[in-house]
Length: 422
Image (tube, rainbow, N blue to C red; front, top):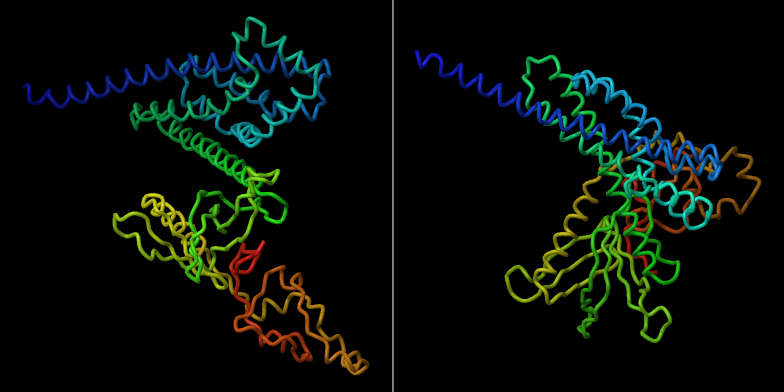
């Protein structure tokens, strides 16, 4: 008798544990949602609505600062009604289609923070208004800056609440599928927030390095470029001279070598860009430093240059080797696109001969250099292997010309793979 009731009791006990965990999570979700909606109401009532009525901020500036927070408040008020009545699956099932308001808010949060800082610095009336509103007892010493971050933080809370609710809901419960869909939708917004944070931090790093470099020749800010690391390494000259320390900045596509400005120079705390080495065609080799000996040497070979980098710190050298290897591997793993002659012939070429009469009319036309504009081939950088002759015989048609050219390039690359002397 006991053996037959044992499994049933264990299943029943498991269901009861699930129900207790679910009830505890549901109760905490409702309480935090109530507090969240109250805080959103503070922003919409005491800032958005009053600022709109007073005209302290221009409409476009107010929209940049507060973005879609009013729509978010309206959507969450509807969600709260479902949660207070115990309809968690149905509530989030109707809430998730409106997550685009969170998308808008998430994508604008850094711009909103920047715009708010500018207005607090330049707009005296807005600065005084903000201080008066934050002094209200309803705000409980909370600043506007902190309140504007609440929707970002709430998405992460939703993710954990929904994961706990789904984990403690029986699969045969009608709410299980609704909660599972909500977990997927909220996790997408959470990932969006994480990606935006990474891009913002990377942009700040690029701007910091750009400010460290004196002059405007070295362009660090570039689309698709990621900051990886920086540090001092000794450059070993090829003729056996004394190694000199240089500052190196490693990015996802280039390695920048810089010199510190002279201590007597007004910009002594800055650097001057000396060389920028593209990593696309770079070959990396650890010459020595494989063991636990002190320091090591790295060899970087580029199409038009070679670097020998030395460090007396074994751990630092290994970190540089790993970072360089990863950057080169990711860059060289990008797919290569080959454009065939038929595809290239579809683009206009300025040097195409319009008629035989135009050729015969000018005796110097056949001696002119045959120039192919980069815009005519899709604005793609072209570099021929083996250094083609400087002067080319002019062909009668564009088709004959393209028979002699094979264009192979890597998508997204806008410069050749040589060393750029800055």
